[in-house]
Image (tube, rainbow, N blue to C red; front, side, top):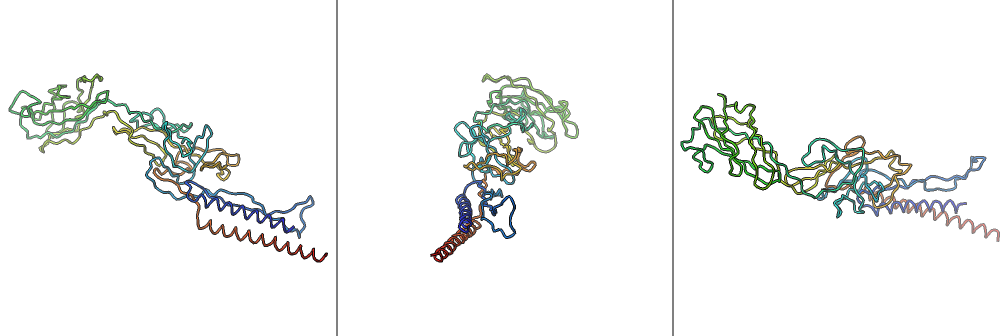
Length: 414
């Protein structure tokens, strides 16, 4: 009997040592979660119960329990690296099977999909129609379904200028030019000028210039608009009240006649917002000069927010929502099955997957450009290793002592 009990102790010590060895081996594995060997004592039970002086039958490994404590967050220089701070798992697709991981060392494969080192595709909540277009600012994400995260490397389509905001101060003390008529090539025929870059439907840049000519009528100016040297509108009358505020055109807006570019683009029809224009005693100044068009853009980078929203950034200053990283949690994460390569699979014991976005409900936040390190405490594991070694030696000593006792009994019988 002592032999069997001691053998169970040796087996338990070896299981403890193996668990410790596995933890130590993965001390530098991204997103690794350490395990702990848990034991239970054995009793031989008969149909009549146990006697009050019954001796146990040894020990068994009850469970090798995973410990999902937070690992340190280490920053990297890769925007697609993601670290989870708090509860939850990244959701991945491996050949159609949904798996889960805490390792956020992601990259891009040849087809533009965001994948982990094993080629598993990162799952996201896809953007809604209102969010998916370049430059879209409203809408959200469809949290009812999952999609592979894919970086779109195609060019972002241009957008023609439709609105220009011009906020200038025209000097109240200015005098009408003595040289007439107005000629944009002769600076003596106008008082001030400014220009803005505009875009047609093909994304081609054009220069739209505004020329200001002081009228002989008090508080009145004539404005001429030219695009690429071609007259578009003018003279358009700007009238200010005695406080320097614009009164004409009504509402401060002016719709220009269409300008047709020579590159085959659609005609450009622009509305001028002049409400920010004033006539004060100070010198001519440009306070506002903006327009809403943009040229073709190329993908310049990807950014990931704390809520897991993935945004593509383009060289034309526009952005496009690509999706929101889908996180998954379980009622009992310790019930997940380890399948290797820093991944887990759902089991009956883990419970049903609960999905959501970072920063909501019980889900942690995502830190882009960082990785979660292993939660193995090397000092603790070395102490556990010594303890397991002592346990092994003690049980081995029990076998040695039992052997001596048995030999003594044999010698007595001899």
